[in-house]
Image 1 (spheres, rainbow, N blue to C red):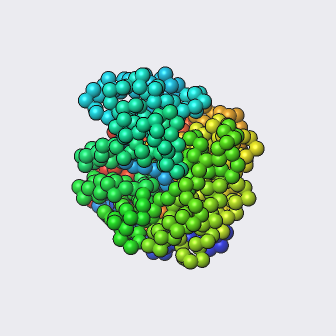
Image 2 (image 1 turned 60 degrees about the vertical axis):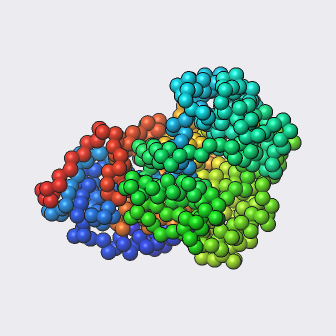
Image 3 (image 1 turned 90 degrees about the horizontal axis):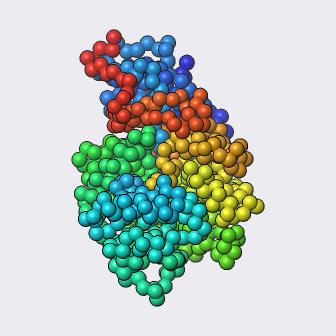
Length: 569
């Protein structure tokens, strides 16, 4: 029987915060308030302590908020606005992706995508095919390339691209978004010559522009038209919904991105929940004013914070490390901001009332951000929920610092299995103790939020979920898991993809679980994830995605029947 579980005695501070106002709503809820019923489901969710619960029906208000979960013994109301019979289908809470890039996902879906290529020759063939199919495009954009996946051992070059396309500019993002590979035509359009020097915090390597050097190319790029942005957003939204993602944090939202999302909202086309983290303090203030914006479009959109950078990425050797790279002994990466610069920028954002999320991959960058948080915490008191994005390589000695001020580790499980061979090469086997260290985070009482960093990696949450408790890729390799001591349980991983991700953006009283008082954001799938093998879990198919009690996406093969006669009998 489903029952409400109170938070009294919860051992961990962040669990107590996560419960928040939801407890009062749960206690006050009554089925008499419900006007709609999703019935005959194999409902599976996590309660507020992270324990699995089962239910067979979900009652909700006309506004799409849950009033009660029902089991077989609970009497169904006789009068309802409508009732949907799911014929025993599996219902789960919608996933929350704590770190993604919505507009980049939309544009990538309409550009050349190299993420599935396994050699330079294969990538060149795919680029050539795309160019041939798009003869009218004046610029060729795309991304997803990974020289490590190609077994190349070094970056590709402008000459490699010139051999495929020489008559127009080509600009291709690396899979991590921290480098662009361009041809000679793109460099000419940007005014880059052999004498051009890379700015501080960046590198130019034979046609690949890393981190801050990207700006040399980006300043010359043509800006997409409003209709192109609108089309990209709608495409991204559909992709996320079709994968069971009902809410996401959009990292580095530009002013143009925000206006695009607002246009979708104004037109009634906003179908999932988005929490934005601006690309600058200026953007945050322009869009939200002094501090986080209210929820817009009936709880679908909010600007809550600012995204900053403390370093680059491990794959492009821009992650800032305490010791040199094992495969590049003269290089330790780059921390682009001094301690004072980072603290001043974080302070300004916090002073304006915004949540601060800082990208930090390397151990030195993570230590720098943790030190800044420690220095600022006495000034900016209250529930600040400082966030570190990625937290991929952390010195084990620094792990306790996360919990000291409740700093959230916003991590991406899929990165571990896509990065494992590269990470070993970059660091060497003796420096992996704090690498992608999800279990160590939980053992140190660190709030954990999971996402994918889409479009820079696989954003199917079932793939990331499986990676989190197996530390294996889709081929179940390596045997026993990579750095298996950092595996977490199936339920812990699920919680980080739902409740933990919602908590990371101050949204735990809105979504992230199926409980009275929260929005009815759920998905219908073809597999019971609590009984599935890792392989079966990865192959789970989403049949329907509901947000706020409304079906926002369907594969057209669902098993539901809806009765809107006003009588549930």
